[in-house]
Length: 545
Image 1 (spheres, rainbow, N blue to C red):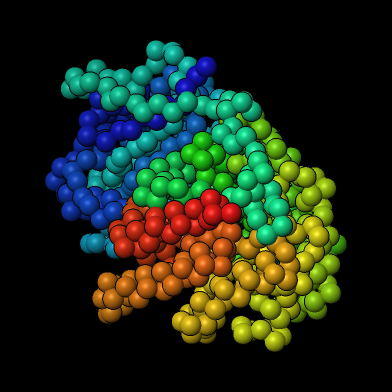
Image 2: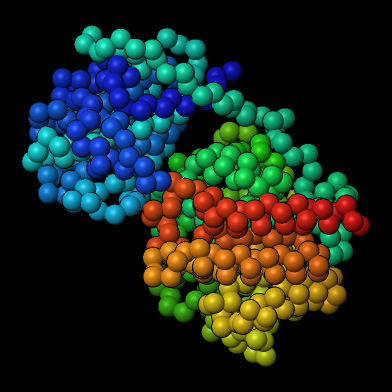
C-alpha cells in the first residue's frame, strides 16, 4: 500500500529540485538574511531566488506517486514586482495548469518586504508540481523557502533528485505517515452517547477538555491538522476534544462555493482533518453553519436568496433547501482517507446546528421550530451522533446578557437536542469577574437539574491585547487567574466538556495576535500549564462516579 510521505526542502541547494527546474535562473541566496523571516519571528539564509534575471524561474518537484498537498514560505518586495505561481502536472510535465495557492501574510512589512505562507491541495492524478517565481522589475522580487510537499509514495524511482550542475549532496530523508485506508483503521470503537446528565462511551462516563481551532479545516491557509495536534497533544496530555467548523460558503475554496455546488478539494481537506484528529484520540465537535459572516455563514445564505434579515435563515424555503442539501451532503460524505462516511465515524463527537445561532429578529416560536426541525433532520440522516445547538447560552429577555430569544433552558429541552451548549465572553457581554464564574455554575446546574442533560462550554475566552502598551505578562496573569476560577467552577459543577477559544501554534502568532485577543499560544506557558492541570481534573471526573 502506498504511504503518505512528506518531503521537506530547506531550499539551500538546487540539488533538491527535479531536473526540469530552471536551475540556470534559480539559485540560493545568503546576502539578505534579515528579510527572510519565518512565522515564528526567526530568520535564516535558506531560500531560492531568481539569479540575475527578471524572467520566470521554476522550481519543479517530482517524487514518484501522486501529489497531495504543498506548503511553502514566500517573500517579495512590493516595489520590484514579481510574484509566485503554483502549477501542477498530471502528464510528467508535458502540460501545466495553475492551482489556487492562497497566502496568509505574517509579520511586519520591513523595507517593503512582505512575508506569507502558501498552501494548496492538488487535483487527483498530479505527479509533479512547480513553484514559478514570475517576472518582475528586479531579480530580487521573489524568494521561496522551506517547501513541504506531501505525496503518495508508490515505490517508483522518480526522486527530487539532482541536476547535472548541482553540488552532490544526500537526498533528505522524508517523514513517513501511513495512509489510513479502511474502516478498520478508525481509532475510536464507540460513539459518544448520553445517559441522563452524562456523556458516555461504551456505557462509561466520559468528560472532555480541549479547545477550538476555527481555521484548521479551512482550504485558504488553514493550519495543517497534524501540525496543530502534534503540538497541543504534547503540551496538554489528555486533550481529547477540539471544536472545528464543518461549514464554509460563498468562496471558490470553501466547502460550498455556491448553492448546491460542493468543492471536492475542500472536502478532501476536511477528510484529512477528521483522520488526523481521530488517529491521535481527539474527538470533534463540528458546527454545521455560522450565525456570523466569517467563512460565509448565514449572511452568505441570505445573499444567495436575496434576503436581508438573519431571521430569514429560519423561515425562508430557498435557504432551508440550500442548507439541508449541504448538511445531507456532509453527513453522507465518504472520507477519502479512511473510507468511512461521516455519519458512521465515531471520531465526531457531536454536530452543532450552527456556531452561536441567535434568534435575532425572529420570535421564539420560530426559532424553536427551526432548532427542533433541523435537529430532527440531522438525526433522520445520522442516528449515530449527538446533536446540540452550538448556542451561547442566553436565557432570553430576563437573562443577565442581552435579550436574545434563544432561551437556553427551554431550547435545550427539545427531545432531538442531546446536550446543552453555552459560551462565555465576559469582556464582550459586560459581565463582571464574579458574574462570569456564576455563568458557568448556573448554566451547568440548570442543564443538569432542569433539563436533565450534559452541559459543555463550547467556547470561553478572556481578551489579551498583545499590541497595546500594557505588558503582556500583566494581561496574561489576569487571564490565567480567571481561567483558574472558571476551570475550578467547571470541575466543581461537573461540567461535561470545556473548549477554550482557541488553540494556536507559534507559526500563527505574528498574524493572529493583533486581532485574535483570546488565542492561546504555546509561548503562554502558565496558561498551557492550567490547561494541562484542569484537563486532567475534568477527565478525572469520570472516575469519581
